[in-house]
Amino acid sequence: MNIEEYISSGILELYVYGALTEEESREVSEILKEHPEVRKEVEEIEAALQQLASAAAPYNPEELLASIKQKLSNKNVKTLPVRRKTHWVSYIGWAACLLLLVGLFFLIDDNNELRQQLNSEKARSARMEQQIADARENAEKAQELLAVLRSKEITRTNLQGQTVAPEAYAAVYWNKEENKAYIDAKELPEPPRGKVYQVWSLKLDPLTPTSIGLLEDFEADDNKIFTLENANESEAFGITLEPAGGSESPTMEQLYVLGAVTAAP
Amino acid sequence: MQQDGLILELQNGNERAFERIYQLYSESIYGIIYSIVNDEKIAEEILQDVFLKIWENASSYNSSKGRFFTWILNIARNASIDQLRSRSHKNKLKNLKADNFVDILENKTHFSSKADAIGITKYINILKPVCKKLINLLFFKGFTQKETAEELDMPLGTVKTKNRACINKLREMLAE
Image (cartoon, rainbow over all chains, first blue to last red; front, side, top):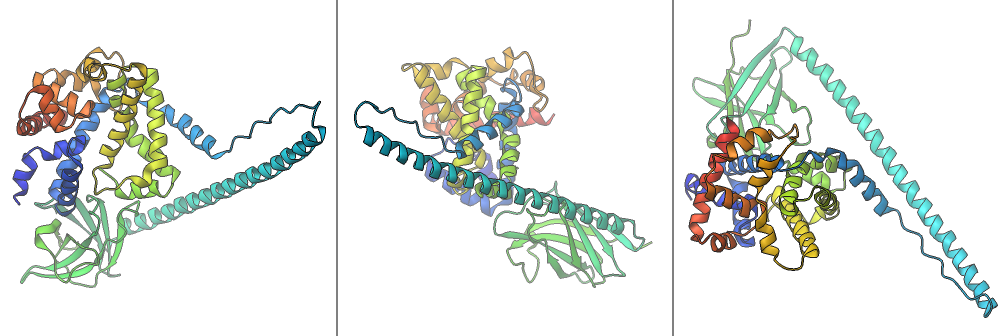
């Protein structure tokens, strides 16, 4: 299939609108997963449409979020059953019996409700703990990063976007003494599902690539800084998109960024 | 950019992910709903319902069917159209066609910070009338390609290519 023709056919715009049939949409989804350039186009169309639709909004409905969350938590709390009226003149015995049952029911229901509240409290505090731990970890990472950047042994290499992703950008901070390479991948697009970025150390004459590792868990990593071992005499670095698990040798058509190492000071 | 990781977290019931999703999509979705119901208060209520539905039905979203944005779009359009139906049982299509997003943009008196609506409005006027119609039906009103072709008395393929040209124009404007 000719991807350029496919993109310019106009099908992707209809896809984002939701104006295609279910089957046509499925086909586009498949193609989108296989071709990063199609995905990029779809994302750009979507961004433009989002901007246009936002412009039609009377205002930015940010403050509605609080009331939506309120509604969400209300839904989780059970409403109490309505107490039924009974004729006290007749069937006193039955009424008493019923009252007792209702009372019991309330007790059980209350109990359930309390337990539910307790559970959601527990869940909330567990979440908080996780958030604090995350924040602390991030702070530690930031400190570590700062130490790395200040070190004199560090060579910084800028990797520029290549044909498949001209907008992409990455940097390698390479500490030759410690054989460590820190990859700053903040400006790389998120890899499609089932794909992973692989970092290569390159010797230029003759061109020999050596894998120094994968940027695993790319999406989950907040600061997008990855630490890899690099004991090679690297002359350049490159990053390619590979199937999950990485490849023996780089897929050159999927070369995202590339840059030559400048001589150390 | 569609963040697959974020959507996954939403599907796992992560409230922070929900908040982020809200920030990412609420304004554009509000714009869509408003362009259909044309009433701020009603649009607000629908927007809230839509996000409740997103939270409750997140697990039914599947990326092989389409974009997450498209999925939300459909929920929003359906909710808005249901609302219109309950307001007036007849003339559903007439209602839908009465308000064009162009009118909304032109009549806007206050603008939010996130979208440069003033800039967009200025450029929207440069769009060809056919572009305004296509974008209004296909995007804001959720017509299918076929319905749009019938509505505008245009061959199916032309809808596709013309609309592409229109969106390209829009993207150029936004990039300026």
